[in-house]
Each structure stands twice: as C-alpha cells, then as structure tokens.
Length: 217
Image 1 (cartoon, rainbow, N blue to C red):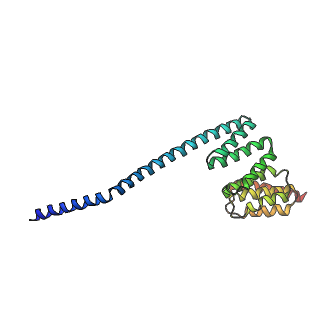
Image 2: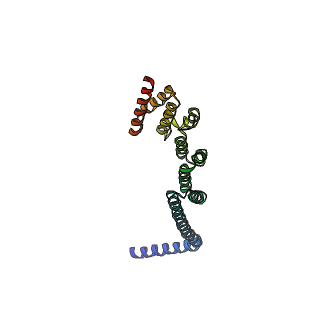
C-alpha cells in the first residue's frame, strides 16, 4: 500500500510542477534571458574597458618616451591627448607628466599646469596636494615667502599627506628670505611630527645648522 501512496504523491507532484511551469514558464525564460544578456553585457563592457586602458597605457608610454628623448613639444601634445581621451587614472597621470616635462624647459608654464591640477575639484585631494607641492618646489628659489605660505600653509597642516615636503619648502624659503624665526617654526613642526621621514629630518638638521651659522656670523 505504501508504494501506491508513494506513486500517487509523485503523480501529484508532477502534476503540480506541470501546472506551475505552464503558468510561469514565460517569466522563467524571460529571467534566464535577462541573466544571460546581463552577463554578456558585463563581459562586453569589461572587454571594452580593458581595451581602452591598454590603448591609454600605450599612448602614455609613447608620450613618456618622447619626453625622455627631449622632444618636449611632441610629448606635450601626446600627454594632452591622453589627458582628454584616456580613463580617469591616466588623465591625471598624464597631466602630472606633462607638467614635469614642461618644468625642464618652461618652469613658469609647469607651475601653471600644476596649479590647474591643484585647483581641479574633480581630482582627488591627494593629487591636488601633490600638484601644489610640485609647484612649490619649482618656486622655492624665486617666489616670496608670503606667496609660498599662501600656497603651502594649508598643505602643511597635520592631516595632509604631503605636509612634510610642504614644511621643508617653507622652512627653506624662510631661510632664503632671511626669516630665521619662521624657518625655525617650520623646522619645529617637522621635528615634532612622529611621521616625518628620516630623509626630511636629516635635511632639516642641515638647514638648522645653516641657520645657526648665520646667527653666529
């Protein structure tokens, strides 16, 4: 008897499944099609993004090579093309390399290029700060201390990534402008920061010695 009941149960289940399939088969098939189409679209997009990144990488390397060969005008054009057509990461990197290439022949134009990155709110804060520091490095021998403080004091704050370099530039500028008190203030900021790199500490020790020598003389 148990076998008979089992067979009846199986028959009932098959009948229920058949009815469910007849009622919902169109939705099941549609869902399957959507899943397949979604996976296909994702794969296609992944391929497109990868292809575009590879092309951008090749164009960037070409621009770097032109720069290293001293073909600055051609390199500038190549970097500009990457900066406008490549994915976001390559765009920022190209702008930095273009500015670095300009620094070899037209420092003032390089400063403008770095300033443009520093002022671009679509760029991550870290890259904005790096651009500001790069501009400061180019200006440390020519700009007034007041100008550099306007540029770099915000970047020298404890929360900023490149504060150590910003403080070094400001300390050096203060010394060059014969402002020992301001130089010492930035030196103390560097010395009191537990995260200051050893190289920065060593350079500041040299600057401190130069300031002490100036005071004695």
